[in-house]
Length: 305
Image (cartoon, rainbow, N blue to C red; front, side, top):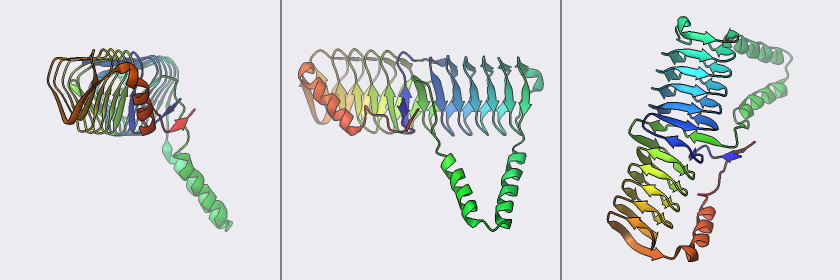
């Protein structure tokens, strides 16, 4: 499976309600994001650098939290948990297997319940090793080897990142509050998801079939709404809005162009600045899908497992 680092991806049958995010596969929150809901998954959880969490984190798989992240709630994992340097954990830390903690982590030792071993990493030893290795290469006057060493370090930053077949991904700078979602980029909500809260994206939004959204949608790019999807709110787009077979929208719809079908139900008003077109779903579905694929909406660019 592949994923695009700039695309927020929500897998099928995920529930994002006012209390938490519940899903099956791996969950990745990129650097400098914020989460003000609980997070529950059967997969693994990866938190980037300097993420702020104001809720509980619960996972059957491993939990990996990168440096500088703050968690105000509890962390519960049935497998291994890795806490990076200078993280702050305000709640309880319940570990099913082993716990590894980086230097400078703030956590109450009495709040730790680990079934396995607890290991405190010391990153200074790694830095000292690198310095000694470089000094030895310089002493041998092996400039080519020094250059190769730095190149390996640089290449290592872009190594392949293996994730589960179903995954939830939030790009860098995402803000998830109790009332909504702010996504700095594009967003794809897969079929049969349930989302409670307003959705604001700086790119395009792709909502697949049989999705329920309780909130308003605001997009700087195009908006695609799949078959039998229900949106209890308004839809506002700076681009085109495509509404497909048997969808229902309770609020107003605004976009540059609005494309809809005859069996779509819209309780509000339609405002297409360049035009509104009602078309036959059977005659246009294939063409619309091909056009979206050519634009890259249906495609995942990135890293392959």
